[in-house]
Length: 138
Picture 1: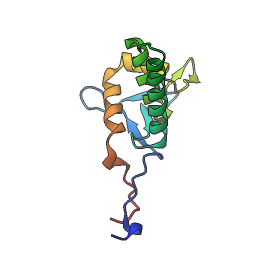
Picture 2: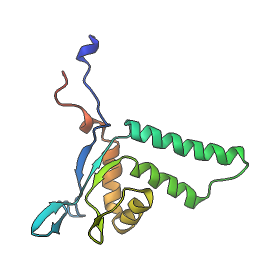
Picture 3: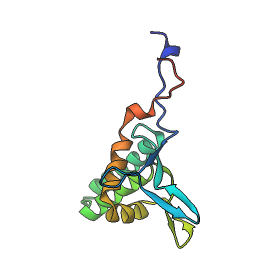
Picture 4: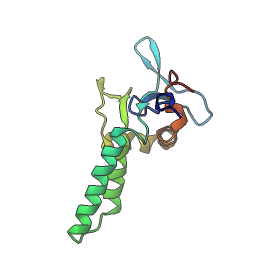
């Protein structure tokens, strides 16, 4: 196989995920007079962002082991949400009219209100087929 014919898997660019409600209807919100999708731009679990966040998580666990400590359930949850948030390039969420920073804590707050959105996010994170670059040779 010619190396130039390999189809690109670009998970660093990300893709837009528009959330659906439990009935499968696309979620929207009002922004002034406009109706907009409730959406995030997700990078995949093969992306540099995910690999970097996973390395940070591994380092945190290894540091605890080296020090003879254990990582609490709460700390493990924090690490998981931080890793997931590292794979969000953009989102539509705001607080008091200001863009809400993309952090693990903010992602957790959203996911606690809408666990179905987190489930959709986690599915998109590992939907590698969706990240194939269409312009690549087949």
